[in-house]
Amino acid sequence: MPRYLERFGEVPPTAGLPLHRADLGWPVGDADADLGAALARFLDVEAVQIECSGTAALVVALTALQRLAPERDEVVVPGYTCPLVALAVMHCGLKLRVCDVRAGTLDLDPAALQRLCNAQTLAVLPTHLGGRVADVATALHCARRVGAWTIEDAAQALGARAGGRSVGTRGDIGFFSLAVGKGLSMFEGGALVVRDPALRRACAQASADRVPRRAGWEFRRSLELLGYALCYRPVALRWVYGLPLRRALRRVDWLGAAGDIHGPTIPLHRVGRWRQAVAVRALARLPEFLAQCTEQARWRCDRLSRIPGVQVLGDSDAVPGAEGVWPILLVRLPAQVHRDGVLRAAWGNGCGLSLPFARALPDYPGLASALPPLALPHARDLAARLLSISNSPWLDDRRFAMLCDTLTEYCASAA
Ligand SMILES: *Cc1c(COP(=O)(O)O)cnc(C)c1O
Image 1 (tube, rainbow, N blue to C red):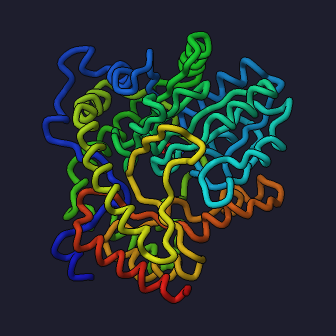
Image 2: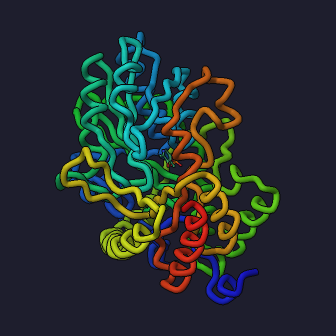
């Protein structure tokens, strides 16, 4: 075990907000357990609908849209994104249309998007990956032209803003994830924002019709949230996160190591009062935590981009006034050999190195058979060259400097 890991413990792969003991009390009144209202204030929107995961929030949104336009059955998603997005689309019986990204960015490629949108399109999903603000205007333009809706996937971007407004609020619908590792966490949870009041009622109705109570699931999630509150600290993370990670790396199982393996079923259930109350109390600390992470990201991005061959991904250049959040720093290396070299050298060292996603969407085992052969050169380029560095405050300056040295060493071989 590396000396640093032994002394200081494990850095989580993303900057999640740690819970405090005082967050865990029973709610004293209804307002105390109304996460929807608390998030609506935080995001400065009229209402927020709480679901049991980001994936569930997407399922609810797609279900509502399907009822409004039953003749439409295609959903356009980026070629490099969370495989759960594809599962949600397939869960609804809809067809995936995978769109390449613009070279070297996380934005949907405008020309490719234009080609994919037609009278069958139900929704387009621009995605704010890793806290980076993505181009929503192009998606809105392409979707509106064919009568489709835009759903902003802001799962990894709670707190990110563009032009002073929260991401997720420019498109017709936006959703955030409250899962482990995505900023504010209630172990698993999702938040849905819907701009138009009539569409908002349709989403609430879809949830009321499709999402059962299922106390067993909520009980399980409550225990898991308690476990998370106890274990989300460097010493305990060595066992609950680091041990399985290093086991997966020994098997050279990068899908497992990246946390990219998901069961085929999507649990759908209501979120109980206690977990909502925990998140409401933690949310009060989120603005300060995000500000701390932004400050750390600022100088670390600067430091990383001075390494020859390293490119740090920023907010989309197509979005004026973008102010993303920084759960991770997304780094693109000259080629896959360098990226893989860095991962082999340091992924298991407890310093917060990881892969955002291990593959381009069509290259996941469960999805290849559901999709026709697709070119997607730019999405595959990201899958081959990107890595993520945790922006957790627990990644101290010494260990960050060691990571920079490793990157320098492996990129030098590219020159
Ligand atoms: C995590 C994630 C989701 C799904 O959210 P869950 O809360 O984990 O269900 C969707 N999209 C992206 C980009 C994600 O990172």
